Structures are given as structure tokens and as C-alpha cells.
Amino acid sequence: MNGGQSGFNNAPVARAFVIACGFFTIVFGIQGRSSRLGLSYQDIFEKLQLWKLIVSFFALSSTPELIFGLYLIYYFRVFERQIGSNKYSVFVLFSVIVSLLFQVLALALLKDPTLNITSGPYGVIFSSFVPFYLDIPVSTRFRAFGIRFSDKSFIYLAGLQLLLSSLQRSILPGICGIVAGSLYRLNFLRIRKLKFPDFIASFFSRFSWPSMGSTVSAASSRNVPRNIPSHTGRRVEGNYPAPPTSSPVEPSEDSIATLVSMGFERNSARQALVHARNDVNAATNILLEAQSH
Image (cartoon, helix red, strand yellow):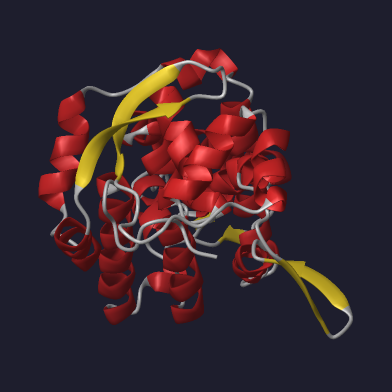
């Protein structure tokens, strides 16, 4: 299961986020300071090292955490494509602030001098698991060793590995991230109505260097205006990949039923699946993007 189009095409905020996390992790790792970046009661309330609230959010404390963390951020770029870079920037900022506030509150309540919360972008990563669980459908299922899995299982396993990477040091920020994602989902303080100005997304585009995915997709496919009906039956204009030049693949009934169960109109679901070559995840992206226009 992938996150849609390869690379960071139409996901400049996620790309900048990955670059920032990789950069800070490598820099502090070389200096041997990764283990000292975590948050503790003494650091925040006694030494007042408030700079750690910002720096520690980007730097992961070990190589395995870096691998799984960047992989999950890369996968969850699909949400930026669905809601747009401006609203995704609000989601990221909200997740960062709320998760950090809950972590500081937990430190204040526990007052445990031995508790040192691990560093890293746990807030954004585990916030993203909320829309991943609720919005991304299962497209394939299979059995291994007598256990049923789906294509979403690999993402959950990567998240579980990251959540348990440092035991109690990593579980707390992970839970705070899930709480932040749930509050965003519930439209706390009408946060889902907000979006940053357009120049924010353009700033991230200039901040991060072009990815191979953007170059390849520009060369391999040409976007043309198309009309895709939304789940309400209203036709909405947007830029979507042109259908393949070969004969279209007739969508399976199971795939159509999956999209219909999410609330999309049957004919809209079928057309989206034709354009997505029967890929349920890509079809979901098409339909959600059509709604946002």
C-alpha cells in the first residue's frame, strides 16, 4: 500500500517536514546530543529550557526511529494532497502545539524526575493515524501464519514499532499525538475551517529541493481538466490524470462497494476507479479532491 503518487508531488509541506526531521536528527546525532533532547520535568519547569520544545520535536533519537518516522511522514503526505497544503499546514501546526501542550501537562502532573519523553515528531505522526483509520479504506486482505492482514496493516505495524521504540518514553508522546488528531477531527475551536495563506505553501516549495517524484510525474503524465462527479451528484471541475490510453479496466464490484460504503455515489465511484485503474486508494483521493474544489 502506498500513499498515492510516488514522490512528494503536490506535498511540499510534507517534503519540508521530512527534510527538517532528517537534518536535525543527523546534526544532533553527529554531535552526540540526541539522547539529551527529550523533555523532562527538570528541563521545562526547573531549568526553563523552553528551546527544547521546538528543537526536540524535529530530531529523532535513534536510527530505527528515524527510518520508521520518516517513512510514516512520507506515507501520510496523502492527506496533504487531499485537503491541500494550506489546510495541511494548519493540521501540522495544530498537532504540534496540542501534542506538546499535553506532554508538558503530563510532566507537570506526574512530576517524575526519571521520566524523559523521547524527542521526535510523534505529534504529527500519530495525529495522522486518526484520519488514516477513519478515511483510508482497506483495498486488499490476505492471510499469513493463520492471521488476517490488510494493506493497512503495514502502516499500523510501523506505527506500533515507533510507539514502542523507547517504551514509556515514546508511548506518552504517541498518545498525545492521537489526542491532538482526535481534537482536529472533532473540529475543536472550528480548526478545520482555518487555512494558511497561499504563500505558506509556496514558501515550503522553495524551502525544500525538488523531489524525483515531482520530476517523474511531470514527465510521465499530463494533467488535463476533467469533470468528476462528487458524491452529492454535482459535477465538479478539477485537474486529474487523464485516463490510460489502453482500454480502461472495469472496476470490480467489491471496489465500487467499498467507495459507496464511504458515502460516494455509485456512478462517481465507478468513474474514479476507472481513472485510478481500480486502485481504491487513488480513487478515494480523486473523489475527495473533487469535493474540495
